[in-house]
Image (cartoon, rainbow, N blue to C red; front, side, top):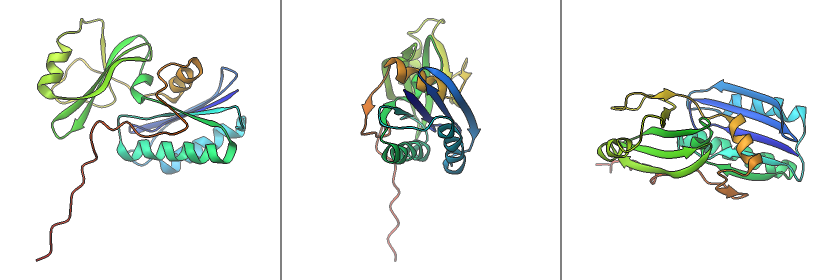
Amino acid sequence: MITVAIETSTTEGSTALFRDGELLFSQAFQAGRNHSSLLFVSLQKAVALAPLGRGDQIVVGLGPGSYAGVRIGIAAAIGLSIATGASLVGIPSVAALARGKYLALGDARRDTFYFAQLDDGQCLEGPVLLTADALAEKLATFPPEWQRIASEPVPGISGLTLRYPSATRLGQLAMDGVSIVARDHLEPIYLREPHITTPKPRK
């Protein structure tokens, strides 16, 4: 079976391809908040090594993270699924940050933060949205062996390990059946409704 993985929730995107559990391709790329062009170049390289078909799967990181980035990754996966017949799998991007026990943190803007507790890819809690005070109280309950991981600095939080979610790790989780939260119908993980600014009325 072929497994293609796509991760675009942060400023570093990545893709990976496995055949029968063996990693054949893995590539990361820096794309800021716009993953479109580099993602499709990377995907083209991946599927050229082992074309997808029915019975294969495409796994996507669903966030939380960049609103546009996650949607680009999902759109690419849907298009690839329509063209090949491969099934779709969605996994929280925070599950692909590391192995072992860790706390995933992120700045959700507007004075809020996201938090998730994971053990070897399995979400034990979250992702949830917290205020700064609630996050500080939550972190105080965990012993030092719970590593704190984020993809960018988080205001007011020290002792962070900075790391990006990995498409390679996503693929491994999908093949093991771990942390799968969606199949076929994929939606980004939104911790709140998108902030929309309405235009000011004309005078």
